[in-house]
Image (cartoon, rainbow, N blue to C red; front, side, top):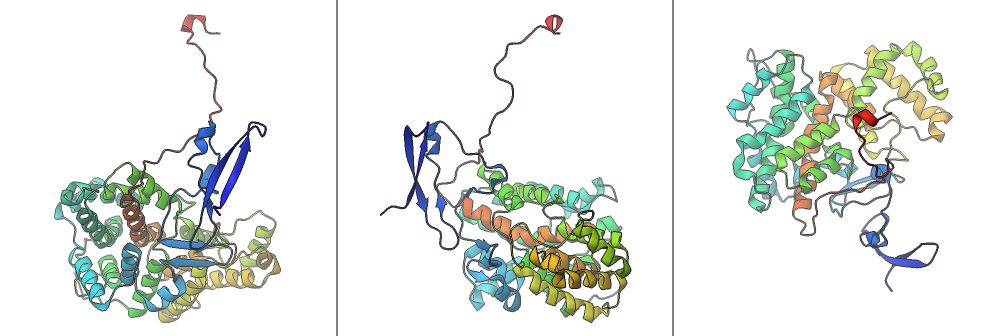
Length: 428
């Protein structure tokens, strides 16, 4: 028997049957594509109850605190996998064989350099330009240099563009940091892994050899894995909407970066560090937390819009955070002691437990990135670096779908009804 929903309207005089589409995991959805026959449209600000696409990439259950990439729990990937293997999984849907991974890593590694003329773009930015402003502009400009991979209807063009983006975004991100700091750009090294190479491009100098710390490399690699995708969030939806028009993949990813820049999206871990600076010291934590309870202070990095339980990424990042602070001898650093004091209260105080205001991934990742020496202005850039593979996977899935249509939301119009133009001399 077909599963359906029957909608009655016009005071019960008419009805329409809407089929229910089953999901592999999570709730089924009501197919409202024929709803427009009623002459009406649905109203759902923020798309909180709307499924805008069908996808096989990522699954989230906020109530149970679950996050799966292609069916694999994020906890298993963070423990056993690495970022490039997770990239392969998100793009192709399966974990690679040993040979497939070696080939994938080799191709990505060989394409990390950017066209030398791109370095001149940075001279057009002010020295104090925000790194995200540079990321948006330079990423969008990739389409001017790699014009041999812009035919979105050609699977090989899409594959080349995907590899180029994953390869070159870390190089561009590091260049944004170096320019902002007044440091010379560093070329990538093919003898280093993906994440180690990024740290090299960020922090090495021409004056002496640079050897990335394996503990710190592992920590940043985990951050990249945990942020690689998160279903149909604002930036991913932006990439899909831009891509639905037929825009080239470089422009679509630039649109995603622009959306991620918003403080309600990619700026959450940046807000955590700003909050810690405002609190000042451990002695001020009890008063601050009382202010949170009284709603005079806002607690950043705790709770999550999607996860109504513990953010599954947070436990992994807590472990990583402890490893990094221990490796760098920062356990007694005032700022990090302050953060741990906040964590302790949130995990023990009934007020926060009852409201499920647990520390989320942004709380711990902000602490780890600071410990790694990455400035707050670069936090969202690191997020964009990690999320590029998720964006491009969703873009490729959408372009490959023969049922794809250009995005065109409708509206509830509440403006003036029709009225006639009045000559200026006759207006009151």
